[in-house]
Length: 236
Image 1 (tube, rainbow, N blue to C red):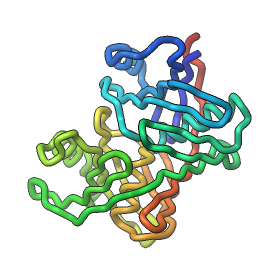
Image 2: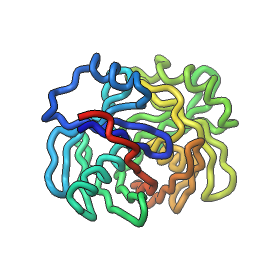
Image 3: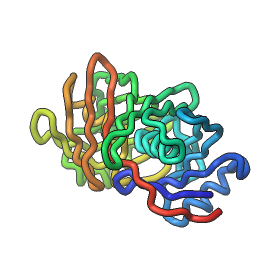
């Protein structure tokens, strides 16, 4: 059974590998129906699973905050587990089911570099298991800055881009241009990057077009809290 899930409008299809190993062509065909990506479940137990995260253009992602949250909730609904370990390659994300559809995930280490200029744009590189370029500006500028930076030569493997406005301490507004996808209504690792580029530690609410995500920063690590909801069963 293939299921469609959403995390604040960031939609993923969950596909089990036992139905067959996915190819990039299959991914782009499936995502043409409106999904931002695919979570390919390689193996699953009662409270742990391994996933491959696909972008809708047929490339794979090192990590997805929304994707791992969805994967954890997907397994929890099947097994009743309250805590789930999600493995994406070498990265492990521990998830805890909260009330309603909310899931708390321990995203792990976050690396923030010094600001630099890229084609006249001041950028802060943030690594959250995957690469991000954070720019403080009017979030509406993401439609200009996102395409400029996402495949810029300064980022040989490409990067995700967040354009962020600091509203007040502990609160930012952001829009995200996701590598391999384009603009998305929400991004979990993008929210972490936006928070980490503008704050050292503490709790940060990140306002995204799809809704709010909550980030807790402490000693170079991040915890992310947000919803994950099943939308429909697509086909069997």
